[in-house]
Length: 493
Image: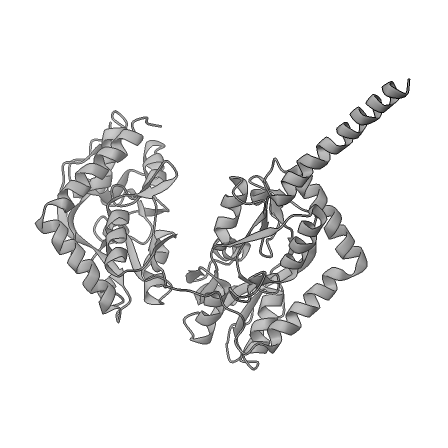
């Protein structure tokens, strides 16, 4: 009998110990935390020599969660928008950087309970005449890329020029050197900016929104989220969240210029619009095209890492003019008007303008189109042509060619003006629905745009363009990407 009891006890002890052994293995696995290190006071950089290399309210929470789990932490400092990608793909366990909880983001990731509440505000120089949301319509307004601040700026405020910057520090710098007339940011970041610059700035009185902040997790990692929520609840009820916020605001206020992420080499930032094949388009969730490949070669020539910034076409030239981007791309036509604003590279392609109409249309020449309903992409020379040459009865301004072609098929418009490459691809894709008029309108030259004093980048671009034109690679690039686009767009609407 004693032997049976001993055996049962041994089996019971083994059953108890087995999960413990498994947990011990998990304890050795680091907790991967993706964070953006310029979202003070939630997450900011303190240096490679520090452990951890970042600090802030979010980091205090993360360290408490890791302690609860008995696991070490490994931090990945990345651009803000990459946090969501890493967490949703399971390449990071937690995302942290003062992230606003939104329904759209909640479709991709699992949010913790709310740990802090703040608001989005407008910051302007103290001597600014801008007084409220409505006054921003004629202004240049900055916000951090990938944030709810930038979404608010584009979708609700709609200023004359939107200036997206990779980090909050760059947003702040654009205010200091007057590249931006105003900026949208979290209230606490705004208060830190005002303190750090001797009251050179002011926060407009009326907040834009109320934001709720949370940590983020992979949708499958509900167990980790539950543990994090229990830590957050403990922090909130004990007053530790308020103490953490106060501590980090005091630390940051004592710094003369704020903590900065160490940059070994400044990236070569290229802004572009994503729907202009074969110059730029999306294939298998990647940006590809002639302009993308040339941008890679130019960045390599400059010995700088390439960073592609996706923006509406209307923002490309303004971002280059203000220095928020090093180069503008997406098949930009070289015109005298634009050349007064930016520095152009050598032309790398000559283009012809074409007009698309419905397949059953009977138009034969340009005169037949005068006074009709005409469409074109916003901010392009095609738009200018439709207004000035075709004297459109009503002009339809589309964000991209896909919208324009759908508008044509749905008879919103009588004709769509486009560049020959893209028009030819559309006519091939929508056979029996749209056709190109047999009218070739004088050629335009395409080039890359640079800030007017950026002669170094222009020289690198000219060198790459000249070499590829001479050895035949340029023509090969256009053939390859035209073929590639036709292959992925073989199924029509």
